[in-house]
Structures are given as structure tokens and as C-alpha cells.
Length: 453
Image 1 (cartoon, helix red, strand yellow):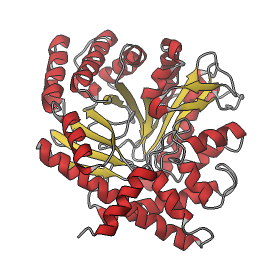
Image 2 (image 1 turned 135 degrees about the vertical axis):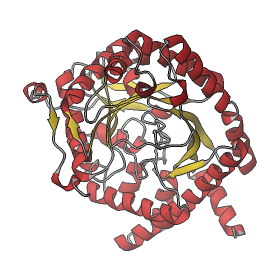
Image 3 (image 1 turned 90 degrees about the vertical axis):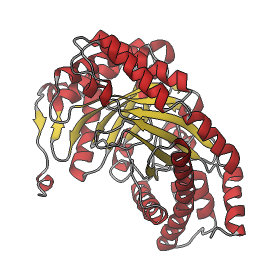
Image 4 (image 1 turned 30 degrees about the vertical axis):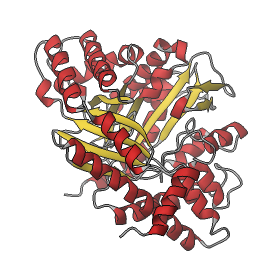
């Protein structure tokens, strides 16, 4: 039973500590939309999404109003587009698919739609290659569409041909969205070990192991965790971990309530609750501030990786007690431009790209929403992707890269995106060349510990 004190505590967390459900995401299978004719494919995609998600936004708003729980985003994820468009013969046709997805998103009223994706961790089909070629134009000509490409897994190793290509794609996407400071790159993620039930953008897609439709929820609450730690200032790390676990339990239980209610009202199966702590630019709603509350003068100093490891583990342990269906990425996001504390640390010089890379060894995702100089070469971007993917491959975890080479910007400049994406300081990138390394191509073999059968 939920008692009166728990209700009052939840109200306080919502009104004063930025507790929210970050996203209710409906996953929709588009496997039935495959056809040889591009116009038929686009029509089927639009019709299926708009029918299946017709009441998604209204239902989320109704739940938000009735329960008093803020639901920040309503989103859709779909089957990786490369899988349903293998018969399409040119990249221009993939752009039409992207525009059909974007049109469907606008009709349903969601904030974003993800799934303009390809899975090429062991190699690429003709359709995969065409989709990847079309990404820059697709993201430049749409508003709500998000794209992702999986270039490696622990089982398959790293597809370095795809890694090299994605560096070029990111550069071209930045160029085509130059009038928006390369904003197209904010809607593009390169993964290793991508998961099929991730409700968070820009990397969400609806995996082939998923049902025809499903409801996945992503909870948040960095501000709530920070406030809880303020009450145990000076306590030992065991107490810190227990405090985070107890708080994560309460946050996750709220997410489960929203997920089950949305599932029931939409008559769509409940999938998972993603436990990730997703920050915003709002003051107090920051993962960096949690780490600093543990005793660090500023995020990025020595001890930051250890503090993040504790946070990530405790969030998961607390969350799994509140729901049996944990999925997605589940941990702590550390996007620079979306986290007020991370922004401040990067601007002061306490947080570098190299330190962020070290932190990604123990956090939920990877190098996320990081602005780099506009003249950064495609090969350097590919090498950044390769490093991050190697961390994911060796550690059997999901890692990702979402970097924005902001056209015309240099280190120290600030790029403004607005909304949840906030603003990002342009960070320094190592100037030494990786071009010869990236030009080798081929595959980096899977690590020996991938042989588990």
C-alpha cells in the first residue's frame, strides 16, 4: 500500500526536485510495410504509424493530468528502416522514407520518431549502405526524425568500414544543417551493442525481437537523487549507495505506474522501464551535481569515474526492486549540452573529452551531445567513434557517440540548441592525426571473452 507520507514525498519530488517521466515511447513494427515500390512503402509506413499511435499523445497528457506526474516527451520508435527497405534502389528513395516517418510523427503529435537506422556491426547490405548514404539529407530535410547506426557488438567485433563511413556522414550532416550549427548531428547516434527497447532518442529503434507494438517508459530524476544525498552529507559510501538505491526505487515505481496505465489505456503491451537518470539544462537537474554532492569540487576532477560507477550501479540495484521489466540503457546519461553541471565543468576546463571517455566505461551510454570544432576531420570523428565502440565491445555494454562538429565554431565557443538539448561548449579535440589508422578498414575482431557458448 502507498501511504500518505509516500504521496507527500512524491509531490515534493515532482514540485521541487524535477522528478518526471522523461518519455513514454511507443515502439511500432514496420516489417509489414515492406514492398518493392517506394510510394507503397511510404504510404504503408504513414498509415500504420498514424493508426497505431493515434491516441498516444492524448493518453500521455491525460495520465499526466490525472496523476500529476510530468511526462516530458511522447515518442515513437520503429523497426530499423534499412530492414524494411532492402528492395529500394537509391538513396533518394530512403530520403522519401525519412520524410514519411517525419510526416507521421507530426500527424500523431509526438516529439520525436526514431528508427531511421541500420545494423551493420558485421557487415552492410545494399539497403544498409543506401540508408547510411541518405542520412545527411534525411536529417537535413526533416524535423522530428532521429537516426542511428550500430557499428559493433561484443560478439561480432567492430566494423571499421562502417566506423570510417560514419565519420564522413557526421561531417556531411553538419554541413547540410550549417544554418542550425550542425543540429542534424544531434539527431544521429553511432552505437556499439545497441539495444532493441531503448525509449530514449536519438538512438531509439524497435527491434525485430519486439512485439507488433509496445510501450516503453524512460524515467528520470537527477534532482531527486541530489536532494536525497544532501541529507546524508559526510556519510560513508555504503550509506551513499543505499540512499541512491532507495531513491531509484521510488523513481522507478512511479515510472512503472505510468507505463502500466499507458499500456492499459492504449491496449498495447507494456515493455520496459528504462532506469536512466536523464538530465536537463535546468538548474538542479544534473548528473554532474550528484557527483559533486558526493564530495568532488567539480565534475571531471579525480574521483569522478569512481563516483559515477557507484551512482550507475546503485540506480540499477534500486530500480530492479521496483520493476521486473528493466530494459533500455538504464544508468546515468552524461550528455554535456543537456546537463548544466557538465556544461559548467567543460567550460571551466575541469572536464575534458578524454575524461568523458573514461567516465563512459562505467556509465549508461557514451560520448553524448558533445560539440567539437567544426574543422574536425572526418577521420578524427571516426577515431572517436572507434575508441568509444571499443569500450562497449570489450566491456559487453552499450556505448554510443553523438558529437556535433559545429560549422564555423572553435574551442570555447558555445552552441545553442534550445529546449531539452540546451547549449554546449565546443570542446578541444586532440590535433594529432588518426587518418592512417582509420583508412585500414576491415573488422576489429571480437574479444576472446565473447566466446561464451
